[in-house]
Length: 314
Ligand SMILES: Cc1cc2nc3c(=O)[nH]c(=O)nc-3n(C[C@H](O)[C@H](O)[C@H](O)COP(=O)(O)OP(=O)(O)OC[C@H]3O[C@@H](n4cnc5c(N)ncnc54)[C@H](O)[C@@H]3O)c2cc1C
Image 1 (cartoon, rainbow, N blue to C red):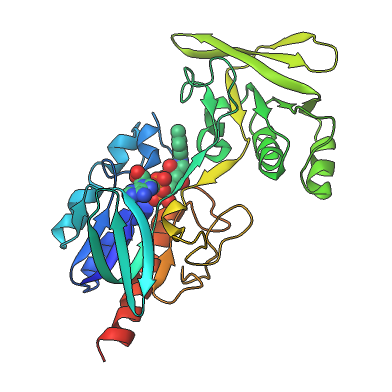
Image 2: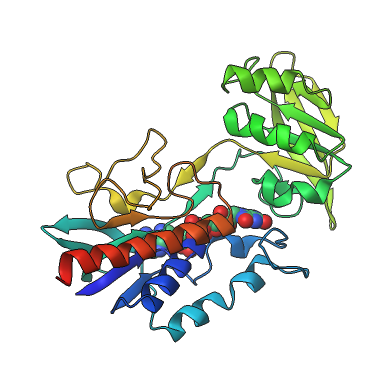
């Protein structure tokens, strides 16, 4: 019986592993289907992790994290978890290879995947001018023009964020109205360096070996194509949280999720089910930043230790 099972080995899972083992839990296993590190390992540059001053990639940032955790006894199982369920006081961790583990507590840290809009060149230039995170990459376009794709709250908030850094933001939306909160729409409309390109969809992002040089946008009403000479294209068309492990055999969920499928937690990272914690990008209101995911992982582990102590070490 594991004291704690951690599902996912990104910044949240690894930090949870560090705090859980160093805090005295025994038999802590982190299940990660790939190499530990999480989605930040896809990033060619990270500048906003505190204390990092050099030019480093996401891979460089994450490389020492597993070694640090293993030093305190974290075990890494390279396996995909198919389902987490609970039987009485015991959690059952079912793996895709058919094996099962039992655990007293579980911290789910399976992260999220930003959705792609699906236009030509989007995948080719992802990380080289196409981004899904203004907080992460906006600074690289300081004093330049960028395009934002999307019409929901995130797209508009990110456009407002970019408008403070960039000289101009083209906001491309396929409809003539935004889905965002009215107050956010008003703020966007009142921002002089945001130009709305409505009823329009991105057709192709193009560039050269150095990265993106422009975006072709098509008006869906009159069929006209416009060329935007921008080095940066930010795509905000939604985010899928990796919550599948919480789906039960009968189709119900192990704990409460919101309408976007994000796990509802409190400030202790406790879910609606005792002994089950969630941390990082898959929780409600996640800022989707490495430093925040790591902080969540630490919080979840500290509270998992308290839970195990209280329920099993009387
Ligand atoms: C291109 C890019 C650039 C970014 N740039 C920055 C930046 O500059 N600064 C910043 O702070 N943030 C940045 N981010 C965001 C940051 O990467 C995330 O906020 C952070 O990684 C979230 O951490 P997490 O641990 O919650 O989830 P993730 O990093 O998504 O890790 C989840 C892990 O769980 C594993 N997993 C999922 N399902 C299962 C399963 N069923 N079984 C086993 N394992 C599973 C996955 O393989 C993955 O390793 C960037 C993201 C991307 C994609």
